[in-house]
Image (tube, rainbow, N blue to C red; front, side, top):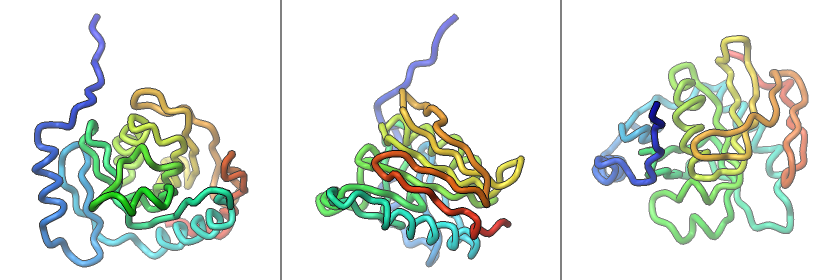
Length: 196
């Protein structure tokens, strides 16, 4: 029996995909990402999706430790070249000096927390491809808000990344309080999260 090794080198088409991502004129408001070396274009998120992101962002502004100079961003690109991913998370908590010293995107490993809210068309990417890329980059916490989960809208907090996998730290449903661990140490109120 043989094991598959995890490559830590960017795929051969990485530079070409990034060049295309940076130089093309994409439709206004669309979300353009590179997932496993393939440039993907998605329409703007729905209003319910945006409401969830805004509600989580409100909680995070109150929860980010005051002694750390961290920013909360909605349109900051994060790269995991070894996975061929350049994603634009719905929310990203990262030290403020990182985006100041980078070009069009930052290394995913610089993030303290990544939040993705699924849309009907991208749920598989958020659940699998992006999660693997964030774990491989060493992002300590990944919060997946899965509005399209098969058993109903759910929240899953992943942590303790090893290779390209996470350990599930916490799960919950829309409408229930959802605690976030240190260094955020807050409880997300999800009762106002829209469904559908």
